[in-house]
Amino acid sequence: MRIPLLDLKAQYLSIKEEIDQAIMNVLDSSVFILGPEMKALEKEIAAYCGTKDAVAVGNGTDALVLTLKAFGIGPGDEVITTPFTFFASAETIAQVGATPVFVDIDLVTLNMDLTQLEEKITSRTKAIIPVHIFGQMVDVERVMEIAARHDLKVIEDAAQAIGSEYRGKRAGSIAHASTFSFFPTKNLGAYGDAGMIVTNDADLASQLRMLRFHGCKTKYYHDEIGYNSRLDEVQAAILRVKLRHLDNWNEGRREKAKVYDELLADAALQLPGRDPLATPIYHLYVLRSEERNVLMERLTAGGVANAIYYPVPLHLQKAFRTLGYKVGDFPVAEKACEQALAIPCYPELSLEQQREIATLVKG
Ligand SMILES: *Cc1c(COP(=O)(O)O)cnc(C)c1O
Image 1 (tube, rainbow, N blue to C red):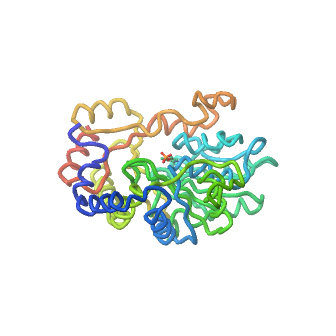
Image 2: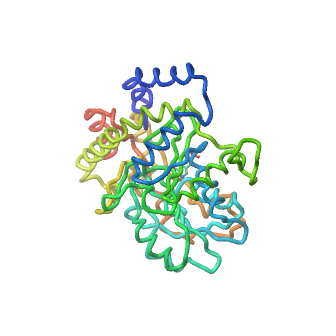
Image 3: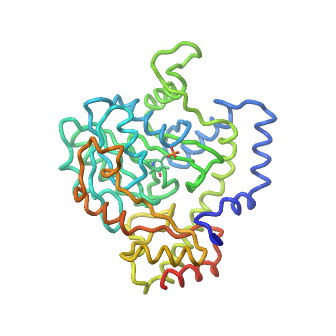
């Protein structure tokens, strides 16, 4: 593809000296696990999100598993999330032995439809995992109000939303705990796997620190059955460099999105829907088209990368067939899966490239 969906090489070249130096410093120190870079990154991410604490883990999936475990969620419990997200949002619920329960999405924002949330709560419900899809926050304060009425925990799956805001509050700062992924293609991406949990709850944070390290506070004294899920020093050092650029990059994505909004205003398709109270970070710029196949062919033939997010809603995934869902159960999520298409949207994209892409989109 002449124009990729994301240009990580161009991003690296723009900060190469800082990154190379940070990696060399770690190699020079030869401290690789649970060291000073990770601890500093935890402080910086907590400060960035406006939370009291942050706990670094191996990846965004583990961040969810460890948080569910720390909340004591397991067999017999239900956890509510959306069917229009990356698999891990619900996979992790099943991993701890609980049952994922889905709420359909809103067709404008593609986030959980909060008007349908409360009716899904049962006596078995223990937690809600709202997902900020494509980097636009859902109204977590409203989720917290509903959760408070039923004594439930709320975990923001903020994997796609670091730095985005709702009514001026940062993603991750509102729920009981929130999880981030630093998978390489996320807005803040490592050069490998990495993840983080942020929270204002000191007890939860210390519980998570035990869980990520084989259930121990003191080495070789194991209080619990835990995991091995740490964010290594090389990744932490890289992320600390990149965190300094994150706001610029997020602003760059917002600018590119604005250009698309203008160039595509008269196109015969749906532009990404906005919640006026949200400040998105455009993890992805996702169009919706009833003629998606034709659109994909045109873009691909023109050398422009494009990708379907997501081809199958979670309730129809083979891995969840035992949950007993069928086609038609979550019609809005199903429609989104039939129509959604992401086009390139990253800070290094030029205006010329965006014009070219827009011409292909319009056909
Ligand atoms: C990327 C992602 C995850 C998982 O993160 P990993 O770091 O890849 O384990 C979870 N939820 C959502 C919504 C994601 O986009």
